[in-house]
Image (cartoon, rainbow, N blue to C red; front, side, top):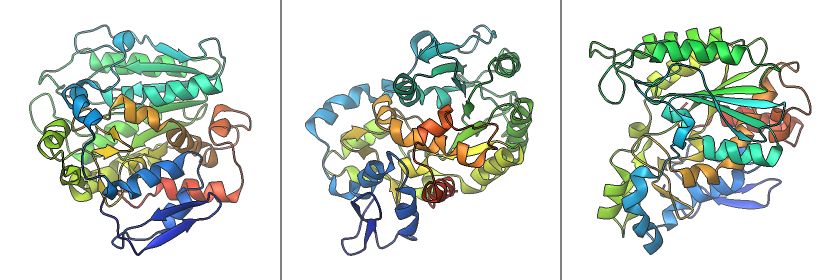
Length: 353
């Protein structure tokens, strides 16, 4: 992001000065959101990213491995043709009674480095149900191989049953997927049809027993990040993706509307990745593994801030679903109106939703 030198916002209560671009719609969302634990340093990375012009020698050495830098989970996931059994892999304190569930395709799997770090620190169990190329939406699709995974819908049904059957009920269920897919016959699935399929699965999950959050706001890079950075090692901002290319706003709005209409909650991560644009390098870390996924290193650096966004679900869910002392309240340890306002600002981050 290209930040101006004149506009300046002093973030109340955290002692952090953020240089804000004159082209930014308003400094106030940054000021409000920065009250969330772990968020101020991430905003500083983004807002100061214009000072990064050249790729460090260490990052240049990492570029050849960037396409493989996403967390792939070893045996943590299945893929097309694999078993449709809902078998989860566990992270964190595997003996804990309090559980967080992560469900979806590779767009869910990429968040394991952050969530497993939180699970270790907070002593909860993280259960991961992932099938590569298989979205949680109740819709048959062509997968990333261009074929139809005939076991995908069976896997989805088995996972929904498994999650609903967990005792005690999970503290929160997080879901993520690639929202834009191709139908088995090669035709495009409209955002309206996709939103309906998302809503169908969310309503099948027992949202009256536990809160469900859907991770949205993940930008797509305009070009292959490693190739672009290799070609522009002395001008890394040339690889930044403009917001209008990073997000499909009308479709995103339909998805978020479907999430809210299904009594689930939006976890908008766009503020952890983009300002006036979406950089490929933040905090001397390669942000992407490819055009669509994040690197494990960058996701891990977001653990505290991402945990706060997940914790914000507890500010919106009924008290019975997010009791004091539960995982959601511990992820968002401070309480009171400033935190509630910060959560609201984070959900409605100005970048894409």
